[in-house]
Length: 117
Image (cartoon, rainbow, N blue to C red; front, side):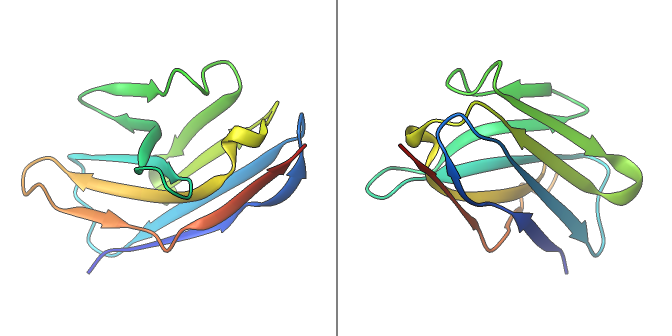
């Protein structure tokens, strides 16, 4: 059983910074991708950033240069440092773990990020 526990998020003014973290526990396969997705009201869930041994690190164009994604393999933890935040970054942010071989998808409970004008 895999669990993803997220922390961070909150309310910040435009131009500010927030940090998110997500730790995976349970039986973790090494052939995986971990990442962050976000979903704003009325919108589809979209990729923010992800990392895997196969595809490397990927960022959505909308966050490149502002967000930094990193992973601590020893802790099975991923981090998302968000800076120069914009109101359009407001969304629920979800941590994701995907297994390439079994194609299983795991999601965290989501954490709200709100950026005010």
